[in-house]
Each structure stands twice: as C-alpha cells, then as structure tokens.
Length: 303
Image (cartoon, rainbow, N blue to C red):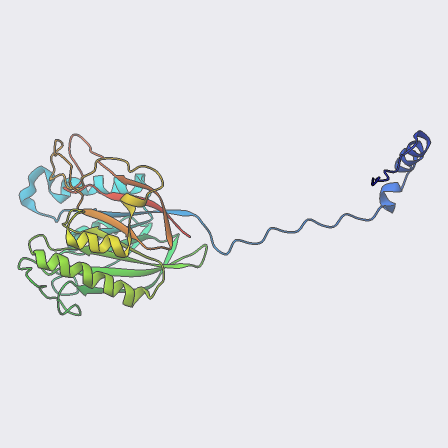
C-alpha cells in the first residue's frame, strides 16, 4: 500500500506565518509580481461595413411624379439613414451621378457606358471617404470586346458596363475590390456570357484579394448565369448569418402593391467576407418608392 505524506501546519506555525505577513515591509520583501502579458494586437480590424447595390432608374421625364427630380432627395436620405459605406449604382445618368456626389461624405468612380466618359448610364461605385481610400479603378464592357464601348453577344439595346474600384480600409490597411455590374435585360446569351466574363475579370483584376460583386443582373436565381455566379462566389442572401430581412423581390416598378417575388439584384462576396445581415429595403415616402428597384444591402466583415 502506498501512502502520500501531507505536511500538517500546526496552529503555532500558522500564527507565526500570519504575524510575518502583517509585519511592516513584508509586502516589499516579497518578489514583485510579473507584469501581465499584453494581448497580441489584432492583425486587422474586424469592423463591419454596409455594402449595397441600388438601381436608380434613369432620369426620364416621362416618369412624371416618379421622375428623378422628385426622388433624388429620397434616395440620398435612404442611403444616409441606412449608413451605406459602399454602394454600387446602375442606370444613373451623369446628372444623377452628380446629384449623389453632393453627399460630401462619399467619393465615387465610374464612367458612362456609351463613350467611357459621361455619355449614357453609369455603374458607379460610391464609398465613404472617412473609411476608404481609392487605390485603383477601371471599367470594362460586357461584350466580346470588353476594352471599349460595345454591344455584347445578342444584346441589342444597350452597351452594358462594369465599373470596379480597389479600396483600402483606412483603419486596418486592408484592401478590397468592388465590382458594380448591370447585365442585359433582353439577350439571354449575353446574360450567360456576362457571368463568365465577370468572373474571369474578377480573377484577373483582384488576383485572389478580397472581392465583392454587386448589381442588377436582370436574372432570377435559377437561371444558368446566376448559378454560375453562385458557384464561384457566395450569394449574400443565402449565406447571411441572420435571416434575410424585407421582401424577396427587388424590382417594384414604382408600384406599392408589386408582388415582389423575383430577385434580380444581388450582392456576391468571396471567401474573405462573413455576411452578418442581408436586407431588401422597401422604404417609401408619401406612398412613393425612391426608385423602381429596392436597394439591397448586406452587413459584411472582412475576415
């Protein structure tokens, strides 16, 4: 049988120890405690950011009460209230882009699709200046000749454009790419080929760095082009940590009673991002929507 010896402290010994502990200067005689080790600094900030896509509906006088002059302040108020940090736009003409640029807290990039300057609709990207610095930017067309304004495949209506920006987050120093797209609304082949081209361009431009692709894809989730996008990137609607908020559909056609069943506006992120929240914002004022599309917003974290 094995015994373990446990030393016994007598009452006398305990009293002596207690008396020593209460002697003046006893604390000073004790060895100083080692300073607590500092927590390692985080390699980057995990602050969340609100990214959004917003088809503005181009400035068309025939829209009457829904024409841009009657809506622009609603659009700006929505963007500010929901605290967008980065947002891509579609359909904005030069005057609409300038109107949004009056929000002094944002800077923007993007060109007109018809001449690569100011003519035609833009797929502009706005970003909060206090949070991001612009490192690079560019544009390409959704066509067989993406380097210049051109019609793509079976698209006949419009030159379709993608604008992109490389941004540096000021607090963490990390960079990310944002791509704002607008697929054709008529050409089925054009939409399928556009998804392939966009993904190829993201790979060429971002080269594995963090990337977000957002915009009006004029396509519902089950179509071949959206399946292609969802296999290569992550649909914020599907991967949000919290349930999606708001209506499912994103095109309202300025009708408050629109069925809102079809998603055609999307936010895609790559593996560098965690999606915490996703929403389709159906804000209205005096029974009018700010645009014929609802904005889509996601709260994401660059991991």
